[in-house]
Each structure stands twice: as C-alpha cells, then as structure tokens.
Image (cartoon, rainbow, N blue to C red; front, top):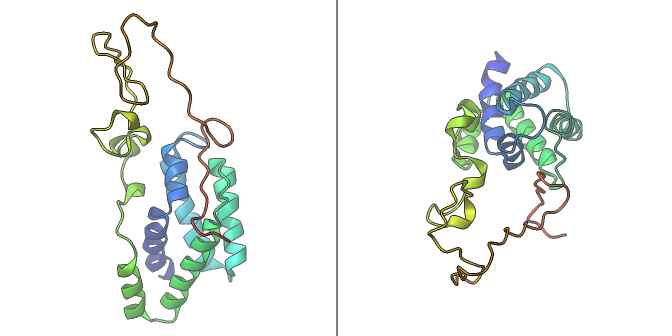
Length: 185
C-alpha cells in the first residue's frame, strides 16, 4: 500500500531531475535508457519503502545507480537533493499528512512526464532552443546554393573553399555533459 502511494511521487521527482533526463536523452549507458530510468524509479521506491534509510545512504544508492546504469557522475550534489526530497515526501506519507504532502507536490515545478512517453516521440536532444535558430539543430542536408554564414553572420565568399565547422569546446570526453550546481560556495 505504501509503495503504491509512494511510487508516483518518485516518478514525479525523477521526471523533474535534469541529470537523469540528460543521461537518458543522450544515450548514456546501455541502450533502452528510458526503460532503465523507469526500473530505477521502481527500485528507489521499493528501497525507500522496504528499508530504514537516511539521506546519505539514499544519495549513495542514487549516485551508484546513475554511475552503474547511465555511466553518469553528478558533480552538482543533485543525488543528495533528490534523496532529501524523496525522504521528506515519504515521511509525510507515513505520518498521514496528506494535505501537506499534496500542497508540496502541487508546489513542485510542472514538467513533462518524459519517463512515461516513448523517447523517440520527444524532441531530439540536439534540437533545443529557438526553432528559428539554426545553431541549435544540425542538419544533414547540405544545400550548396545557400551561402554559409560565419560566426559574425556575414555570408562566406563562394570562391573560398568550404571549411569544416570547428568543434565546440567540451569539458571532459566527447558525449559527456557536465552538470554543475548554480550555487557558489
């Protein structure tokens, strides 16, 4: 019974977690990341309900799951924040403080329930931002009749040889996204 009430809360919290969403969208870990994230939510909910856990222990479990299942290490302390939030909600649920629980859940940011939707129907990760801004999406369609634009927006001369685009600077290995806290210490 407690699991049935707590599992949707775990889903909601994980749906709001940017690090997990990025790991799934960018194909970190084994194929089938969305299914792995759904199983991760089941595991976390069962783990919390069936064990007496503290926030540090739960944070370690979440960090281990992200590392083992998604080959992702979070340097932003978000696993600990997720653990604290989940344990606060579980405590409210166990104590029967349903009105306070509902109010806190309603106060959470509204988000797309991406864990419950097939990932191929969502926006591809390389196409974020303004749809009119070509810098956020890449296209395999090369049209030689359209002049290339350089970084300043000036048209490139058609007599100059076509240059390959310069790779973007990345922190760490290619394919990795670094998530850092906004807070300054």
